[in-house]
Figure 1 (cartoon, rainbow, N blue to C red):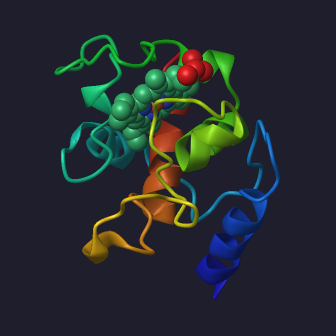
Figure 2 (cartoon, helix red, strand yellow; figure 1 turned 60 degrees about the vertical axis):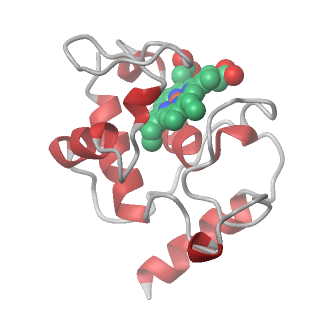
Figure 3 (cartoon, protein in one colour; figure 1 turned 180 degrees about the vertical axis):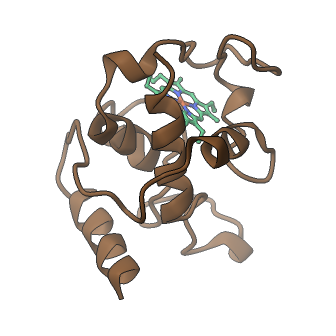
Length: 132
Ligand code: HEC
């Protein structure tokens, strides 16, 4: 029930144009260790394909290096960027990881499903927040 409400909130907020921050957590408090795993794993975030973090391999360079990101952005700003970065930068070359509406060319098996679930988003926010 709580999760459904959070998902509704996320959906509603993605209708608001150009939001820089998503204040409400989508799930229980994130776990940085699990977030790191999501960051690395191919079946999950696979953020490393585009981003570098010191001491983490592989390290992509499509997006900016994320060292120190936890000192520059708040948890709410990090959450917004993981959920749907096009709310911050409409032309960003990064996928919206927790948005289901408005996506194009989605394989049938993935239709209506966000790339990452609410808890994975919170785990990533905890991990990124610790990169100071
Ligand atoms: C296809 C490549 C790609 C993937 C995959 C990707 N990103 Fe990004 N990301 C980008 C790009 C490009 C930007 C810069 C957006 C812009 O300013 O245009 C970015 C920006 C960001 C930012 C903001 C950085 C800043 O300096 O403000 C964060 C945080 C971020 N990504 C986290 C993640 C996380 C976490 C994942 C995995 C769940 C991920 N990204 C996956 C390409 C990617």
